[in-house]
Image 1 (cartoon, rainbow, N blue to C red):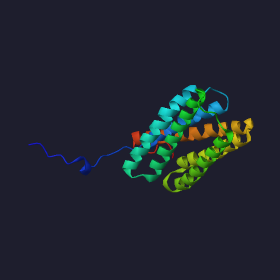
Image 2: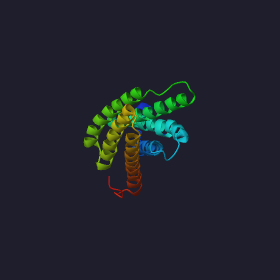
Image 3: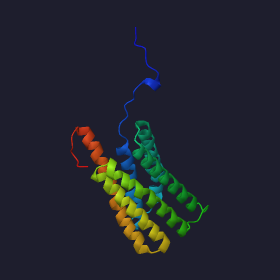
Image 4: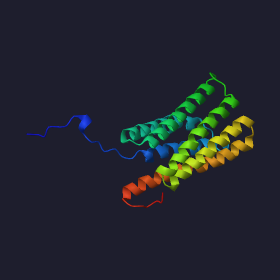
Length: 192
C-alpha cells in the first residue's frame, strides 16, 4: 500500500537560494542601462529585458526568499524587481508620448531609492559577504549620482553615474556567478 502523503502545508519543500537569479537579473540590466547612460548603446532592448529579466525575475527571486523566511532578500529582490518593472513601463509610456520625464521628479525618485538602498546596505553588512556589500555600496552611490544628474541636468554627472553603474552591475554578476559556481562545485571556487 502506498504511503499516505502529507498535506502540502505539512510538507517541507526545499527551495534553492534565489539570490543567484536575482543578482544576475539585476546585474545584467544594470550594466546595460548604464552603458546607455554612457551613450555606448541604445536602451530599447534593455528596457524590454528590464521588465522581464530585471523586473520579473527579481520579483520571483524575492517571492522565493519570502517563502524561505529571508526578509532581507525578499525585500531587496521584490523592491528592485518592481523598480525595473516601473522604470520599463515609464520608458514605454514615454516613448508612446503618454508621459514626459520631469527631471526634478526623477531626481526625487532616485534620491528615495538611494535612501532605501542605504539602509539595505547597512543590512548587507550583517547578512552578506564582501561581494554583496560591494553591490549595495555601489548601488547606493549610483542612485545618489543619478539623483544629482537629473537634478542638475549635467551630462558629466550622468556619465560618472554610468561608469559607476557598470561597476555596480558587474559586481552583482560576479556575486551571482560566485553563488552558482560555489554551489555547483560544493566548495569555495569564487570568493564572496
